Amino acid sequence: MKFIMIGHDQVDGPALRQAHRAAHLAYWRDLPGAPLYFGGPLLTNEGAPCGSVMVIEAADEAALRDLLAADPYVKAALFAHTEIAPFRVVFEKGELLA
Image (tube, rainbow, N blue to C red; front, side, top):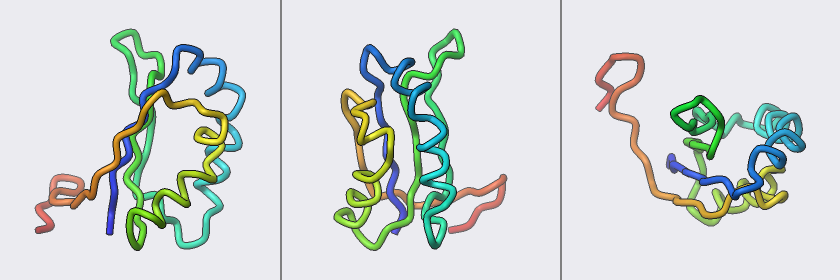
C-alpha cells in the first residue's frame, strides 16, 4: 500500500535540512526494495524548502512509521508536524492507471 507523508518544517528547518540532507537522501536511496515511490521538498513562493512530500510503499501504517522513524530528517526533528494518509496513484506521467 502507498502512503503520502507531508512534513512541514520547523522554524529552524533550513539549518536542519542542510545538516542532514546527505544522510536523508542516502537513507532513502539505499533502502532495500526501494519503498520511496517519489519525494521532494515543499517550496515557499521564493523557492526555499519549507517541508517535504513523500509517497512511500509500506505493508501498513506501522511499517511506514518504522521507515520514517529511521529517516535522518525525522531523527533530527526537522518537521514541526506531519500528515500521513493512504494514497492511490491514478495518473502516472499522463497515463490513467486505474
